[in-house]
Length: 71
Image (cartoon, rainbow, N blue to C red; front, top):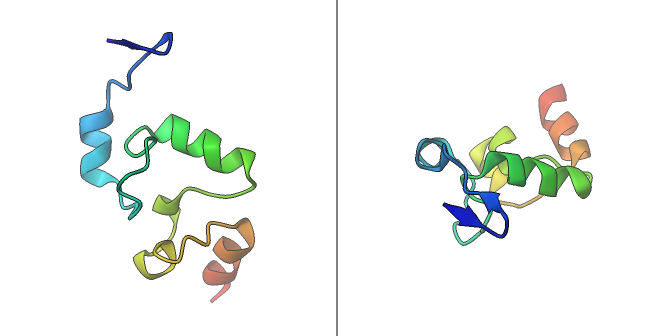
């Protein structure tokens, strides 16, 4: 299935089963490649790399990731 000149993610159903992002209405949810690219362009990491209590704050900064993993 074509969408905007590219194929839809063939793994979206499997990805959605494991996606821990709480931003349910995000158009990139379950499309890991697009999600990673989006956050990388902003100097962030995707929410799936954070524990649930941090992911819910939407603080996806690299600094926050390092801070929580120093503990």
